Length: 238
Image 1 (spheres, rainbow, N blue to C red):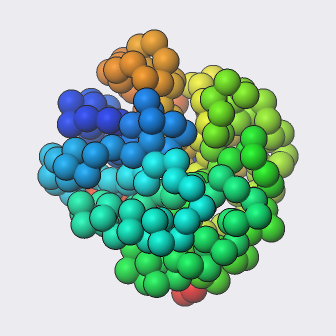
Image 2: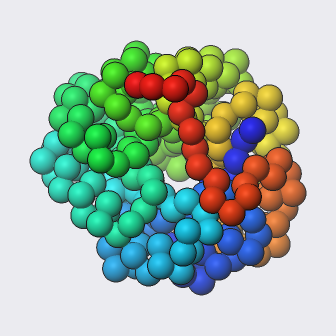
């Protein structure tokens, strides 16, 4: 069943997402790029506010492919108490080495690799993500002016990606300037979650979250949570 991931940047927006029934509260600063990271104290405050009612994820920022820097960011973000940590694979030549360098962090944290439809095809990386112990993978867009995810990849291609990721035991999410009108066509792909920011805001991704838009997104997706929804990999063991 496909869940709703709502990207928020403050305790106030987290409150809206909780009230509207988002399945995952995703900490992100949209003014800092595709995976803009919130300050650590703000992430910790959001985790405290959510208080286990929903899983909380957080992005690491648009970091360069420096394994040591990424490792440090993972550990610092994990100390905030988040359930999932999202890190970007922006550069095709260095993606595999970054994945391999994070094997130790995967033992202690639930890492989600975020790949970008407007950068390169990450499909060949899926087996490596699985064997290295990543919890999941997400397809997003890096440059928001390049179009929506559904402009860049066909539904058939997205469906194949979701299916392959899940067969490898990876949780799989879709995002990238998705609109509420995209939901009916994406639901049959059975992704684990759909991620939204722009569609939930009053005037673009850097403006404030709108409660009514959040409710409309919730109404368009099946209700999957009780009080502590978790994203479970699609196989018993890694």
